[in-house]
Image (cartoon, rainbow, N blue to C red):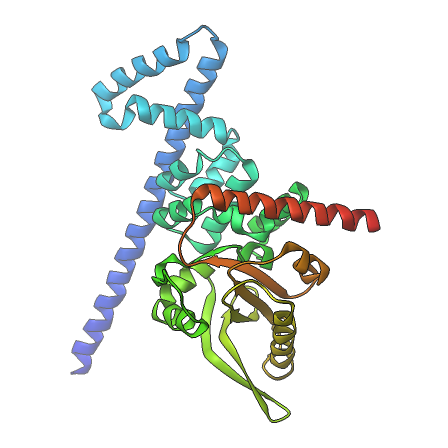
Length: 347
Protein backbone atom coordinates (compact mmCIF):
# COMPACT_ATOMS: atom_id res chain seq x y z
CA UNK A 1 0.00 0.00 0.00
CA UNK A 2 1.39 3.44 -0.98
CA UNK A 3 2.06 6.08 1.68
CA UNK A 4 -0.69 8.24 0.19
CA UNK A 5 -3.31 5.48 0.43
CA UNK A 6 -2.18 4.62 3.95
CA UNK A 7 -2.41 8.28 4.97
CA UNK A 8 -5.95 8.48 3.54
CA UNK A 9 -6.91 5.34 5.45
CA UNK A 10 -5.73 6.81 8.77
CA UNK A 11 -7.47 10.09 7.95
CA UNK A 12 -10.75 8.24 7.31
CA UNK A 13 -10.44 6.33 10.59
CA UNK A 14 -9.79 9.57 12.49
CA UNK A 15 -12.75 11.36 10.91
CA UNK A 16 -15.06 8.39 11.55
CA UNK A 17 -13.93 8.47 15.19
CA UNK A 18 -14.83 12.17 15.39
CA UNK A 19 -18.27 11.49 13.89
CA UNK A 20 -18.99 8.59 16.27
CA UNK A 21 -17.88 10.60 19.29
CA UNK A 22 -20.08 13.51 18.20
CA UNK A 23 -23.05 11.14 17.78
CA UNK A 24 -22.39 9.70 21.24
CA UNK A 25 -22.23 13.14 22.85
CA UNK A 26 -25.40 14.18 21.02
CA UNK A 27 -27.23 11.08 22.29
CA UNK A 28 -26.13 11.89 25.86
CA UNK A 29 -27.32 15.49 25.51
CA UNK A 30 -30.67 14.40 24.06
CA UNK A 31 -31.18 11.87 26.89
CA UNK A 32 -30.22 14.43 29.54
CA UNK A 33 -32.54 17.08 28.09
CA UNK A 34 -35.43 14.62 27.72
CA UNK A 35 -35.04 13.17 31.22
CA UNK A 36 -34.88 16.63 32.78
CA UNK A 37 -38.01 17.63 30.85
CA UNK A 38 -39.81 14.55 32.19
CA UNK A 39 -38.72 15.38 35.73
CA UNK A 40 -39.92 18.98 35.40
CA UNK A 41 -43.28 17.84 34.02
CA UNK A 42 -43.67 15.25 36.77
CA UNK A 43 -42.60 17.74 39.44
CA UNK A 44 -45.05 20.38 38.22
CA UNK A 45 -47.99 17.94 38.14
CA UNK A 46 -46.97 16.51 41.52
CA UNK A 47 -46.95 19.98 43.12
CA UNK A 48 -50.30 20.78 41.52
CA UNK A 49 -51.94 17.63 42.90
CA UNK A 50 -50.47 18.26 46.37
CA UNK A 51 -52.16 21.69 46.42
CA UNK A 52 -55.54 20.12 45.67
CA UNK A 53 -56.38 17.23 47.94
CA UNK A 54 -59.85 16.73 46.50
CA UNK A 55 -60.69 13.07 45.85
CA UNK A 56 -59.88 12.03 42.31
CA UNK A 57 -58.30 15.39 41.38
CA UNK A 58 -54.92 13.83 40.57
CA UNK A 59 -56.44 11.23 38.28
CA UNK A 60 -58.56 13.84 36.48
CA UNK A 61 -55.68 16.25 35.91
CA UNK A 62 -53.45 13.46 34.56
CA UNK A 63 -56.19 12.25 32.23
CA UNK A 64 -56.94 15.78 30.97
CA UNK A 65 -53.30 16.72 30.47
CA UNK A 66 -52.59 13.44 28.71
CA UNK A 67 -55.38 13.98 26.20
CA UNK A 68 -54.27 17.57 25.49
CA UNK A 69 -50.54 16.81 25.25
CA UNK A 70 -51.02 13.66 23.18
CA UNK A 71 -53.17 15.56 20.69
CA UNK A 72 -50.39 18.11 20.21
CA UNK A 73 -47.16 16.17 20.84
CA UNK A 74 -47.92 12.49 20.29
CA UNK A 75 -47.97 9.26 22.30
CA UNK A 76 -45.04 10.12 24.58
CA UNK A 77 -47.47 11.81 26.97
CA UNK A 78 -49.91 8.98 27.62
CA UNK A 79 -51.45 8.70 31.10
CA UNK A 80 -49.03 5.88 31.90
CA UNK A 81 -46.02 7.98 30.91
CA UNK A 82 -47.23 11.02 32.83
CA UNK A 83 -47.63 8.87 35.95
CA UNK A 84 -44.04 7.65 35.48
CA UNK A 85 -42.88 11.27 35.31
CA UNK A 86 -44.78 12.08 38.51
CA UNK A 87 -43.24 9.05 40.20
CA UNK A 88 -39.80 10.13 38.99
CA UNK A 89 -40.23 13.55 40.59
CA UNK A 90 -41.63 12.04 43.80
CA UNK A 91 -38.79 9.52 44.18
CA UNK A 92 -36.07 12.06 43.27
CA UNK A 93 -37.36 15.40 44.63
CA UNK A 94 -34.03 17.30 44.47
CA UNK A 95 -33.29 18.81 41.05
CA UNK A 96 -29.53 19.02 41.73
CA UNK A 97 -29.33 15.25 42.30
CA UNK A 98 -31.54 14.59 39.29
CA UNK A 99 -29.22 16.60 37.01
CA UNK A 100 -26.26 14.53 38.21
CA UNK A 101 -28.19 11.27 37.81
CA UNK A 102 -29.43 11.84 34.26
CA UNK A 103 -25.93 12.64 33.02
CA UNK A 104 -24.97 9.02 33.66
CA UNK A 105 -28.20 7.02 33.40
CA UNK A 106 -30.79 6.95 30.64
CA UNK A 107 -34.53 7.44 31.04
CA UNK A 108 -35.04 3.68 30.67
CA UNK A 109 -32.54 3.09 33.49
CA UNK A 110 -34.56 5.47 35.64
CA UNK A 111 -37.80 3.64 34.80
CA UNK A 112 -36.23 0.43 36.19
CA UNK A 113 -35.11 2.22 39.37
CA UNK A 114 -38.14 4.25 40.44
CA UNK A 115 -40.31 1.27 41.53
CA UNK A 116 -37.69 0.41 44.22
CA UNK A 117 -39.09 1.77 47.49
CA UNK A 118 -36.08 1.12 49.73
CA UNK A 119 -33.77 4.15 49.49
CA UNK A 120 -30.56 2.26 50.33
CA UNK A 121 -31.40 -0.53 47.90
CA UNK A 122 -32.14 1.98 45.14
CA UNK A 123 -28.92 3.88 45.88
CA UNK A 124 -26.96 0.60 45.67
CA UNK A 125 -28.30 -0.10 42.18
CA UNK A 126 -27.69 3.49 41.06
CA UNK A 127 -24.07 3.54 42.22
CA UNK A 128 -23.26 0.04 40.91
CA UNK A 129 -24.93 0.83 37.60
CA UNK A 130 -22.83 3.99 37.25
CA UNK A 131 -19.62 2.24 38.32
CA UNK A 132 -19.96 -0.84 36.11
CA UNK A 133 -21.84 0.91 33.29
CA UNK A 134 -24.69 -1.60 33.22
CA UNK A 135 -27.05 -1.68 30.28
CA UNK A 136 -30.76 -1.41 31.07
CA UNK A 137 -31.07 -5.15 30.50
CA UNK A 138 -28.27 -5.88 32.96
CA UNK A 139 -29.77 -3.53 35.54
CA UNK A 140 -33.14 -5.28 35.32
CA UNK A 141 -31.47 -8.69 35.58
CA UNK A 142 -29.55 -7.56 38.68
CA UNK A 143 -32.73 -6.26 40.32
CA UNK A 144 -34.71 -9.42 39.46
CA UNK A 145 -31.92 -11.66 40.79
CA UNK A 146 -32.00 -9.76 44.13
CA UNK A 147 -28.36 -8.73 43.80
CA UNK A 148 -28.59 -6.19 46.62
CA UNK A 149 -30.04 -8.71 49.06
CA UNK A 150 -27.30 -11.19 48.11
CA UNK A 151 -24.39 -8.84 48.79
CA UNK A 152 -22.79 -8.71 52.22
CA UNK A 153 -23.43 -4.96 52.43
CA UNK A 154 -27.21 -5.51 52.75
CA UNK A 155 -26.61 -7.36 56.02
CA UNK A 156 -24.80 -4.41 57.62
CA UNK A 157 -26.39 -1.69 59.82
CA UNK A 158 -28.13 1.03 57.82
CA UNK A 159 -25.55 3.68 58.77
CA UNK A 160 -22.73 1.45 57.50
CA UNK A 161 -24.56 0.83 54.22
CA UNK A 162 -25.20 4.55 53.81
CA UNK A 163 -21.56 5.40 54.50
CA UNK A 164 -20.17 2.79 52.07
CA UNK A 165 -22.55 3.80 49.28
CA UNK A 166 -21.67 7.46 49.79
CA UNK A 167 -17.98 6.60 49.55
CA UNK A 168 -18.62 4.53 46.43
CA UNK A 169 -20.45 7.40 44.77
CA UNK A 170 -17.77 9.95 45.64
CA UNK A 171 -14.60 7.92 45.04
CA UNK A 172 -15.64 4.85 42.98
CA UNK A 173 -13.82 2.77 45.61
CA UNK A 174 -15.43 -0.62 46.06
CA UNK A 175 -15.16 -2.97 49.03
CA UNK A 176 -15.46 -6.77 49.24
CA UNK A 177 -18.88 -6.32 50.89
CA UNK A 178 -20.11 -4.80 47.61
CA UNK A 179 -18.47 -7.45 45.43
CA UNK A 180 -19.17 -10.89 46.89
CA UNK A 181 -22.62 -12.47 46.99
CA UNK A 182 -24.39 -15.16 48.92
CA UNK A 183 -25.87 -17.21 47.37
CA UNK A 184 -24.57 -17.44 43.81
CA UNK A 185 -27.00 -18.56 41.11
CA UNK A 186 -25.32 -21.12 38.81
CA UNK A 187 -28.42 -22.46 37.10
CA UNK A 188 -26.84 -21.69 33.70
CA UNK A 189 -24.42 -24.60 34.21
CA UNK A 190 -27.10 -27.17 33.39
CA UNK A 191 -26.27 -29.43 36.36
CA UNK A 192 -29.61 -30.83 37.46
CA UNK A 193 -28.82 -34.19 39.08
CA UNK A 194 -25.86 -35.66 40.93
CA UNK A 195 -22.48 -34.29 39.90
CA UNK A 196 -18.89 -34.23 41.17
CA UNK A 197 -16.64 -31.30 42.02
CA UNK A 198 -14.82 -31.96 38.74
CA UNK A 199 -18.15 -31.84 36.85
CA UNK A 200 -18.90 -28.51 38.54
CA UNK A 201 -15.50 -27.08 37.65
CA UNK A 202 -15.73 -28.29 34.04
CA UNK A 203 -19.21 -26.82 33.66
CA UNK A 204 -18.02 -23.47 35.04
CA UNK A 205 -15.13 -23.34 32.57
CA UNK A 206 -17.48 -24.22 29.72
CA UNK A 207 -19.72 -21.35 30.81
CA UNK A 208 -16.90 -19.07 31.98
CA UNK A 209 -18.42 -15.91 30.54
CA UNK A 210 -21.73 -16.49 32.35
CA UNK A 211 -19.85 -17.44 35.54
CA UNK A 212 -17.92 -14.15 35.46
CA UNK A 213 -21.18 -12.27 34.83
CA UNK A 214 -22.60 -13.87 37.98
CA UNK A 215 -19.39 -13.14 39.92
CA UNK A 216 -19.58 -9.51 38.84
CA UNK A 217 -17.54 -7.00 36.86
CA UNK A 218 -13.75 -6.69 37.18
CA UNK A 219 -13.07 -10.41 37.69
CA UNK A 220 -10.33 -11.78 35.42
CA UNK A 221 -9.78 -15.54 35.11
CA UNK A 222 -6.19 -16.62 35.77
CA UNK A 223 -5.99 -20.37 36.25
CA UNK A 224 -7.74 -23.70 36.71
CA UNK A 225 -6.26 -26.20 39.18
CA UNK A 226 -3.47 -23.80 40.10
CA UNK A 227 -0.69 -25.98 41.50
CA UNK A 228 1.14 -24.87 44.61
CA UNK A 229 3.97 -26.88 46.14
CA UNK A 230 4.76 -26.88 49.85
CA UNK A 231 7.49 -29.15 51.26
CA UNK A 232 7.45 -31.25 48.08
CA UNK A 233 3.70 -31.76 48.39
CA UNK A 234 1.35 -30.50 45.67
CA UNK A 235 -1.96 -28.76 46.34
CA UNK A 236 -4.41 -27.43 43.78
CA UNK A 237 -6.59 -24.29 43.87
CA UNK A 238 -9.74 -25.06 41.89
CA UNK A 239 -10.08 -21.62 40.26
CA UNK A 240 -7.96 -18.50 40.54
CA UNK A 241 -9.23 -15.04 39.59
CA UNK A 242 -8.03 -11.47 39.98
CA UNK A 243 -10.31 -8.57 40.87
CA UNK A 244 -9.06 -5.34 39.32
CA UNK A 245 -10.75 -2.81 41.61
CA UNK A 246 -10.03 -4.74 44.81
CA UNK A 247 -6.49 -5.40 43.53
CA UNK A 248 -6.69 -8.89 45.01
CA UNK A 249 -6.22 -12.44 43.89
CA UNK A 250 -9.38 -14.46 44.53
CA UNK A 251 -9.00 -18.20 45.15
CA UNK A 252 -12.20 -20.21 44.65
CA UNK A 253 -12.67 -23.64 46.21
CA UNK A 254 -15.60 -25.65 44.83
CA UNK A 255 -17.31 -28.03 47.24
CA UNK A 256 -20.20 -30.47 46.94
CA UNK A 257 -22.31 -30.57 50.06
CA UNK A 258 -22.26 -28.52 53.25
CA UNK A 259 -19.33 -26.52 54.59
CA UNK A 260 -16.90 -28.47 56.74
CA UNK A 261 -14.50 -26.90 59.24
CA UNK A 262 -11.55 -28.51 57.45
CA UNK A 263 -12.26 -26.36 54.38
CA UNK A 264 -11.08 -23.30 56.30
CA UNK A 265 -7.62 -24.80 56.89
CA UNK A 266 -7.25 -25.65 53.20
CA UNK A 267 -8.15 -22.12 52.15
CA UNK A 268 -5.86 -20.55 54.75
CA UNK A 269 -3.01 -22.58 53.26
CA UNK A 270 -3.85 -21.41 49.73
CA UNK A 271 -4.09 -17.76 50.77
CA UNK A 272 -0.87 -17.92 52.75
CA UNK A 273 1.00 -19.34 49.76
CA UNK A 274 -0.50 -16.81 47.36
CA UNK A 275 0.40 -13.93 49.66
CA UNK A 276 3.98 -15.18 50.03
CA UNK A 277 4.75 -16.13 46.44
CA UNK A 278 2.25 -14.42 44.12
CA UNK A 279 1.46 -11.04 45.69
CA UNK A 280 2.81 -8.10 43.68
CA UNK A 281 3.67 -4.66 44.98
CA UNK A 282 0.56 -2.51 45.43
CA UNK A 283 -1.82 -5.48 45.62
CA UNK A 284 -4.03 -6.29 48.59
CA UNK A 285 -3.98 -9.66 50.40
CA UNK A 286 -5.72 -12.51 48.52
CA UNK A 287 -9.33 -13.42 49.22
CA UNK A 288 -10.73 -16.94 49.54
CA UNK A 289 -14.18 -17.91 48.33
CA UNK A 290 -15.51 -21.33 49.35
CA UNK A 291 -18.61 -22.32 47.37
CA UNK A 292 -20.80 -24.89 49.12
CA UNK A 293 -24.34 -26.17 48.74
CA UNK A 294 -25.06 -25.40 52.39
CA UNK A 295 -23.50 -24.06 55.56
CA UNK A 296 -24.16 -24.12 59.27
CA UNK A 297 -24.31 -20.54 60.60
CA UNK A 298 -22.88 -21.62 63.98
CA UNK A 299 -19.86 -23.15 62.23
CA UNK A 300 -19.19 -19.84 60.49
CA UNK A 301 -19.74 -17.83 63.66
CA UNK A 302 -17.50 -19.98 65.90
CA UNK A 303 -14.69 -19.92 63.35
CA UNK A 304 -15.07 -16.13 63.11
CA UNK A 305 -14.80 -16.22 59.35
CA UNK A 306 -16.45 -12.80 59.14
CA UNK A 307 -13.19 -11.37 60.53
CA UNK A 308 -11.00 -13.12 57.95
CA UNK A 309 -10.42 -12.90 54.21
CA UNK A 310 -12.31 -16.18 53.74
CA UNK A 311 -15.90 -16.10 52.58
CA UNK A 312 -18.18 -19.13 52.68
CA UNK A 313 -21.17 -18.84 50.36
CA UNK A 314 -23.96 -21.02 49.04
CA UNK A 315 -24.62 -21.71 45.39
CA UNK A 316 -27.61 -23.09 43.52
CA UNK A 317 -27.36 -25.07 40.30
CA UNK A 318 -31.16 -25.26 40.20
CA UNK A 319 -32.99 -22.15 41.30
CA UNK A 320 -35.39 -22.65 44.23
CA UNK A 321 -38.54 -20.58 44.51
CA UNK A 322 -38.27 -16.88 45.29
CA UNK A 323 -39.89 -17.53 48.68
CA UNK A 324 -37.14 -19.98 49.69
CA UNK A 325 -34.42 -17.58 48.54
CA UNK A 326 -35.98 -14.70 50.50
CA UNK A 327 -36.28 -16.90 53.58
CA UNK A 328 -32.56 -17.75 53.40
CA UNK A 329 -31.62 -14.11 52.86
CA UNK A 330 -33.76 -12.89 55.75
CA UNK A 331 -32.26 -15.55 58.00
CA UNK A 332 -28.74 -14.49 56.96
CA UNK A 333 -29.55 -10.84 57.69
CA UNK A 334 -30.93 -11.74 61.14
CA UNK A 335 -27.79 -13.76 61.97
CA UNK A 336 -25.54 -10.91 60.83
CA UNK A 337 -27.45 -8.38 62.93
CA UNK A 338 -27.32 -10.64 65.99
CA UNK A 339 -23.56 -11.05 65.56
CA UNK A 340 -23.10 -7.28 65.29
CA UNK A 341 -25.13 -6.77 68.46
CA UNK A 342 -23.01 -9.28 70.35
CA UNK A 343 -19.78 -7.67 69.08
CA UNK A 344 -21.07 -4.26 70.23
CA UNK A 345 -21.86 -5.57 73.72
CA UNK A 346 -18.38 -7.09 74.02
CA UNK A 347 -16.77 -3.78 73.02
